[in-house]
Amino acid sequence: MSFNDLGLTPELARAVAEQGYTTPTPIQRAAIPGVLAGRDVLGGAQTGTGKTAAFVLPILQKLATQSGRLPRALVLTPTRELAAQVAESARAYGRHVNLRTQVIFGGVSERPQIEALRNGCDLLVATPGRLLDLAERSLLDLGQVRCCVLDEADRMLDMGFIHAIRRILKLLPRERQMLMFSATYSADIRALAARSLREPLAIEVAPRSNAPAERIEQHVYRVPQEHKRDLLVELIVSGNWHQVLVFTRTKHGANRLTQGLVAGGVCAAAIHGNKSQAARTRALSDFKENRITALVATEVAARGLDIRELPHVVNFELPNVPEDYVHRIGRTARAGGSGSAISLVAPQEAPLLKDIERLLGHSLPVATLPHFTVNPPRRSAAPATPASATGGVPRTPVYRAEPRRHGRRPSPRGHGTQSALPRARRPG
Ligand code: AMP
Image (tube, rainbow, N blue to C red; front, side):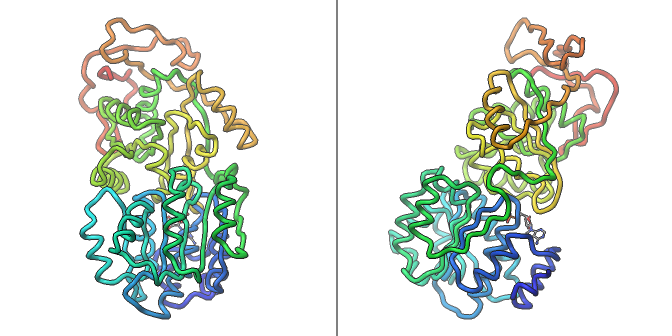
């Protein structure tokens, strides 16, 4: 089956082909004809399945039949990064049709966004907070919206957007098409779907939430919390990793690990909710363009991020909610690619690992720890000997205070020169 068989116009099919996609993914095969036919849709889609194109393509096609200055389609997303990404996709898929896609989100000046809206907008992509703010101040008129998408609806609810969403839906015309995508189905999601969708076409392209893409090679390292950073540096440097997304549980933890990675010679930046939007945007683009090796992220900041051919995801700490494990590792092996997902599991995280394995329906293989040098904790005078860090191999970890030897520092892309000599590392 090709994109032409789905009833897309030649302009859209051409834009898709120019993106390099020849075959529609399962969610695209199921959703595109349904949306074109005007159906409401409830989509349960595994991350990285191509769901953005599944709703953006038919929406663009429907928008192209009329014109106007006010937004006629609205996509709500949980995060600013996802909003920017969806808008970017819409512009790429819509490059041969004369439509304007605008994106609005908080954390940046509203002025250019208001200006852009004044200049005319067909498809509007937004996060709920800023959207509601502009709409309630009459700087944005949603009265012409005929199609509304709730993307990553479960995450929007997790982030407390339910009230904003309800208020936004009240500002839309009653006669409208609603599409809702969610990776998981909690009672709240079901209630929202029941309230806002009319006889939806239910699309489930893969068993929900407990089935990460098969091409993700997953394994676990059992390692004490205080040795995780050194292990991660070792994995990145000796594995010649050039791009790794690392998840921490807290914003503070993300900052601390970023500093630790940089001290270990790995080019890294953090992305989380306490960073300014400018810093978040810069970190993400540096990461996508391979100017930094490691992007250290909290759950929320990384949700929905699409980084092409991302080869590695690391759970520096396991998430508290097992479903989040699936979302996190779904950042790799997207749309048919392959990737690795590694979890660093401290003894105190064993119950969290059990929960994840229960959700997945199988246990995760435990890999033998590589040899790595454990640095003493910062400002610690007398380091202990952490034998467990050697993965049971009888080896005393080497503590070194001298700076890294010349030539061992990885390049900004993380392609460090390799050597058989023991690694010298500055203490973290
Ligand atoms: P999404 O699930 O929408 O975030 O999409 C995940 C990735 O799949 C993105 O990089 C898309 O550009 C890509 N993609 C979307 N549709 C296709 C397709 N039909 N074939 C291959 N890749 C696709």
